[in-house]
Length: 111
Image 1: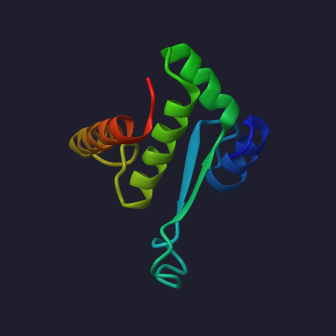
Image 2 (image 1 turned 180 degrees about the vertical axis):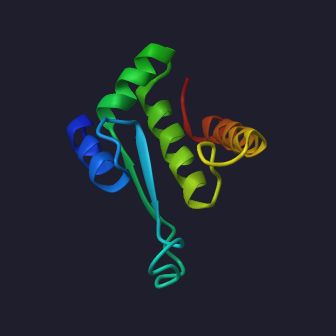
């Protein structure tokens, strides 16, 4: 968890995008050094500030937005990609995200 300034620095320094965002994932099983720690998927960084704004705009509880962003980041670590893949791959990720988030809401979240 970080703020907008922190995630903007990460986004700029590692992804070349000089702006804040809601979530960034860094996979440990891709690229140079892949497989060094086979049981570690990677890192997920969430901007609490952006998450709070997104939650308010969507009219959902902040906690729900945090869980959703964490799930989104984990799906990226598992190889799902809505940005660089095809439209079909984006739909596949969104469907999986909705399916899993429904389970999380049912089991762990109020409201």
